[in-house]
Length: 533
Image (cartoon, rainbow, N blue to C red):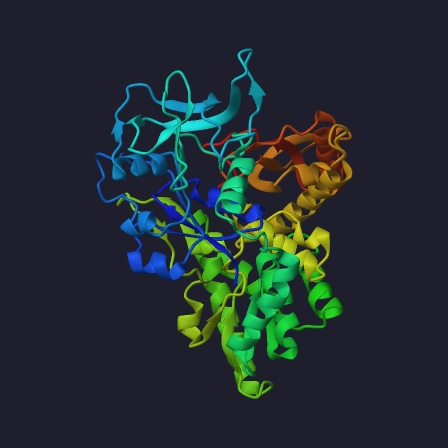
């Protein structure tokens, strides 16, 4: 049994980052809404509890409180931002409205040599005070400490920026240690979960394989499993893990909709059929998909068509498989590469409640197919899935490649998806990716492919003039997009070297007959981080 940390979500859009940081400290944790029952907390038996931030205010929304069991559990508690404010209010302190909001960088002075912050600092002042470089995001602030608490941190504009009750092991900070802008945030959260809460650091992906394999075997027994292989990282790792557990009881159905990147379909087949020797049925459905997309320009309609067709093709193949009697029973389980962010959706909804998705599946497939659901990755974050993939023997380049959306090229072609557009885009995109891999940044020694979290080419269905020899040509335009992220809330366009952009554009225009012009997208977040349409 793993030691566990319970994170109660009050509706912050960065709650998932708390979980990411805890997992980085090799400690298992789960996010649950703040209004779970006392019984749930007792049965969960956490070794420590973290209360998240929120968009709400303690005096406006009296629903957003921590359950009584948090204070009765006898375990350490860490309140972050709103978590600090609800701790203060619930334990007898005060929170007040402020006409000065704080958002962004701040320097916080640590007080009292508390266990949480002792020895953790970014610099010291001339007077010898330990200082922390942090990220703030709040309007309200704690104005009176609860009984038994002492001051742990302060700023000139926020005199109580941290508080502690060492006897009960309750700690709270007004800033956000989970975001990468708080320089010592990882150290603080690691200190809380490993030292103060006493959790073993036993959440390690290489070791997790054995545990996951045992779980799959127990759940599946001698029954058959069918998995929709999209070619993405999550479904690939799920397939490799399930294949490790049950071998030929697994059949993968790879629906090739013709909207993948250049040669990506062949790469998937070569890996799973050629190296892992898994049973894979490749369905060439490019004509079907492109036929259904003809004449459709609305982006949401395109997404729905692609998602709906995937379900239809997959369903037909599953039924064929059952009818063929290849398996002794036919598939009774549907496997999906659902990961933890698909299960948990942090962030307040219109009701101001934290939201937890029950489960995520492709268009209601289990219901349509009458199959039981197998989701072996549902406890893992993306970086953990990647670590697991490498530990399972999948190639590093395959596991760490940039995510490509389910609808693939369909949403990278603006307007109508035509076969000739898809062909031009595939080739232009392949050149861009190739050059990103080749171009090494001298400062970091990494390729620009590794320095970006997502990069792709977009097809613009407009024609622009170009000169070829003595004549004018009118051909299509593509736009390049590259994004850098430090965590999921801090994405921005990548400042690629001009020399790289020059090389990519020259190659695309020279090598892909039909494209005359290449643009580079410098739209920032918000609102234009990733998607185009």
